[in-house]
Length: 219
Image 1: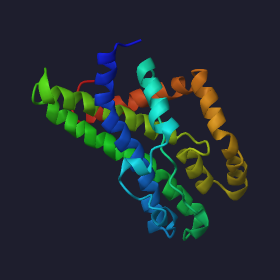
Image 2: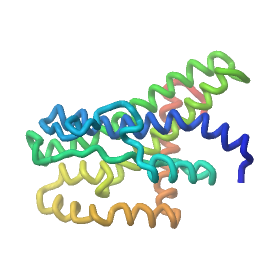
Image 3: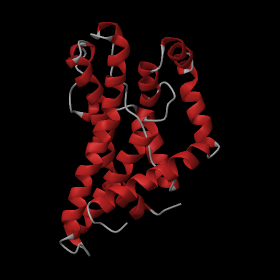
Image 4: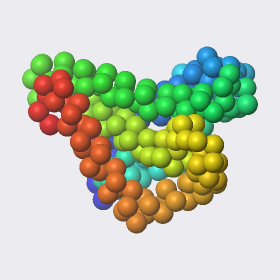
């Protein structure tokens, strides 16, 4: 178990990237849904960038905190932004667009953190503020790529599952959508047994290596 100073240091590095990653992921769903005809999230005040509007005590605080202390791969979730797919202009197709918005924003944030890492490394960050920025940038890249890859897995209620439902022919889409009530249970079992980590680890690692290489950063 890490000591108190190590815990405080980890929280200081990871708190901001995690809150940004989870909050903007959810808000992106609501923004796209509103653009495509559903105003549910806006009407409930869920398009706010205030993290307090989106924090889930378990998914935003407890689970990431435990994983951070245990040293495993880090992920979490916020309170889902409400979307009434019946209000969308083209419910089946637009559902896929609403779903993909979250992972797309995570990718954009991972790129943004990579740019910040590139800038901080140019300052030779051995100590002080630039070292902190570099460490926070690495955390931002990691959490956003994990959320992107995790949510692209083709299983409802993950975003990838909803994208698949939106793109598949109706018969297959209905069959896949019936898994949604059991999706979180499957996810938790996969995490507890290490299966999820074995799937995410190589995909996230490959994504991170590619992103860093794109900006000329040695991983």
